[in-house]
Amino acid sequence: MKKQSPPHPPLTINNSLSSNHPSFLKAVFAILQKDISAEFRSRELLSAMLVFSLLVILIFNFALELDVKVRQSITAGVLWTTFAFAGTLGLNRSMAVEKDRGCLDGLLLAPVDRSVIFFGKMLSNLTFMLIVTIIILPVYSVLYNVNLFRLDLLGVILLGSIGYSAVGTLIAAMTVQTRTRDVLLPVLLFPIVISLLIAALKVSNGLLNGAEFSEISAPLNLLIAYDVIFISIAFMVFDYVVEE
Amino acid sequence: MIQVNKLIKRFGLKTILRGLNFNVQPGEFVALLGPNGSGKTTFLRILASLSRPSLGEVKVAGYKLPNESAQVRARLGVVSHLPLLYPDLTAEENLQFYARMYGITNYESRITQVLQMVGLEHRRKDIVSAFSRGMQQRLAIARAVLHNPEVMLFDEPYTGLDQDASEMLDGVLKSVAAEGRTVVMTSHDLVRAENLATRFDVLSRGVIVASAASKDLRKTNLLSFYKKALQVEA
Image 1 (cartoon, helix red, strand yellow):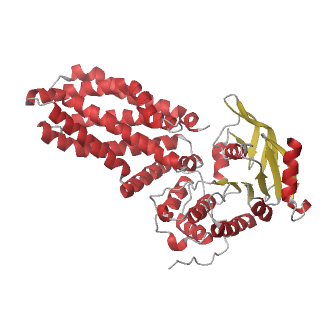
Image 2: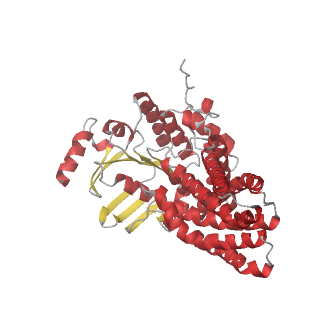
């Protein structure tokens, strides 16, 4: 039976309605919360990233039938390859959801600085990458017999993921306007993040192989500088990227 | 309320708006008519600060675009043929999200009020993807009026709606206009535009080619006014 709508009461202008420009952080966290709520209901993005990551790790595990020592030496490479490709899946989907349903316009119509949208989406992408990481690490540890639960390594993964999601969110906002966005995102993203991935890989490798701090300090500094530079660039140019 | 002087918009080598002049007084309901490709949507996107003017002056609610776009957006409600809603969230969650983005404090009572206005109060906990096209469009209007905007822009709001949903939207648009808001609506539906608007502007090839107040047009005359405006331009 068709559900009947109740009669419409007339709308009166609510003069007491308190509407101001929202604070920067409140708006950023509103976007983050919205993305997490939508994702936990649809599970489109996380499930794709997770399944992809697990498959990559399994394929590497069976393709490279290596002894324990060699496995340790390739751990950082396999991990960062997995994060990079799974991250691309997430970045593409996260922006496509906004664009395809016109919601990007909805965000752009809010009376906030447009960098709020960048930081909100970046934090969402970072959160999803970290959730995938938390699930992937124990699986990897079991399959490859390598202990990855080290605070220093987790710190490097966090730094690398921050830089990756910052650049990725900016590039995804550019490519989402095009018809070939699925192809264009990795083509534009990987040349830019290659220095970040190499730095993250070197630091991770050094940590897993017990290198001295002096040996990893240069790539670690590069990693930190990369994060700061690209977050600053994105903050400055995001407005021009999303506006016609 | 809206002042546009010599507005030019180019996309690459293509010029969409060619020195457009447009003024709207507070409380006016202007129907912007014109054939496909005349620049209606581009013009509305510039007024909504979603697109930058290439040249010319645009002021909305006393604020200049694009320099004071955040102030303009705080006073603007936009409804397009896309609902700008998240299908995986409930109606209430969508409105809560937009209320937070607009900095509305104590938004729960306001959400109830706008949901009642569009007749969706009983569906507030339902996921938007389960809504019909007409219900989504009504919720889109609730979203657009949530922050109590002075100016409302409607871009082809009847696209994809069936007869019942269109009639319901008529009622909602009338109540939005009756509150004294300034409204600019693009439409191909001359009958609906005639019933709602207080002024009709015809846009062709990026300029306004004709303008008339509803009181100056006889009830059945909008179609001939529209056709004549386009013929003169051709």
